[in-house]
Amino acid sequence: MHTPSRSSYDVVIIGGAVFGSSVAWWLTQMAGFDGRVLVVERDPTYTYASTSHTNSCIRQQFSNATNISVSQFGAEFIKNFRTYMGGNPDVPHLTIHSFGYMYLADTPEFAQTLKQTQAVQHSLGAGTKHMSRDEIAAAYPFYHLDDILAGNHNLVDEGYFDGGTMFDWFKRGARANGVEYIHAEVSAITRAGDAVQSVTLADGTEIACGTVVNASGPRAAATARMAGLEIPVVPRKRYTFIFDAAQPLDRDLPLTIDPSGVHFRTDGKYYMAGAAPDDDTDVAYDDFTFDHSLWENKVWPTIAARVPQFEAIKVVNEWVGHYAYNTLDQNALLGRAESCPNFIFVNGFSGHGLQQSPAMGRGIAELIAYGTYRSLDLGAFDVNRAPRGVPFLETAVI
Image (cartoon, rainbow, N blue to C red; front, side):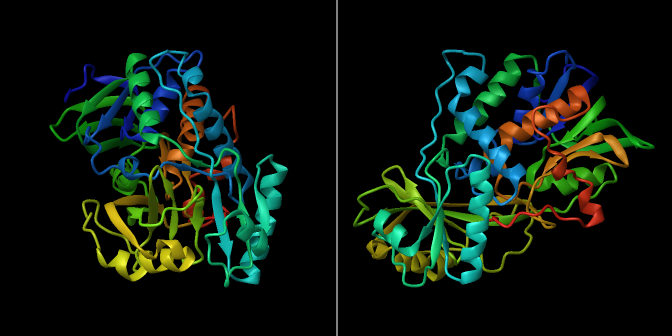
């Protein structure tokens, strides 16, 4: 559908990918909330959405307690997905393939940072272990570790899951519960003083609204500017490679975070690797040009050096997607704009988005329905820290 069925909605969500759909679905779960909700999505195929290019990973290995708690709820939600979705037998069971993240430290300073973050994670119930080089070698003898001093690893609720199915059922559930989705693009947002009054679609249709939610991923800044607001979120390219190995490993490969920044893991019968370009600059919203030299010059040499069995490997698939990159601190920007309180941000996840979408969607729905976060205090992610230049402190950024 390209046109809304009404001229006015209580909530208009701009962007229907995982965050827009998570917020929409959670709104239908808020007791006492009976507002009309519209989701406006410019590309219902989601071909270029960050959600479609995700590696579907989840980790508790953060340094900030709030990020850890957000991912712990994400794990609970994934493991109890059908229950959260109302027990519908058509909803599939989701599982977490818990081979964990393996952070490798090659300097005393980084090793000490890993030790400190493990203590924070352990205090919150995470299963992270701080490991010596010898302990890593004993558990995973395929690594080349001459330059490594220590590592952190967690085999509990940390690994990857079927994020595409979770996203699909957020959409299905929201629609089944009365949320309206339309295929359209917002071209303007009208404000009167400190409040948004309406959004205008590219075809000229004007829609009055009580609240606007910016869930437009890498395009968050463009959406915010329509309302006279600024947010430090830009598109940055991230590359993914699926490869086959002539000599497969005899056990699962953890999601290994090499000190170079290249990361790689088991992916079914294949392996997956990811990396940022060396020239990690902002790109145009529609720039998905693939740099094929990245594999030969950076990714493959790193993988082969760290896992000698990967000397002979072959790429079987590859793609480039966009991070919705928060240039301030690479963490979520949430909540109401101080100068326009009925404009709500859920943006800037910088690669953490899919795993954080259950908790963040619930939190934004609570903020809309009740005026405050109820289940988990997400105030540390307040979007208004951006204009103040006060970063959210998180050392474990990939």
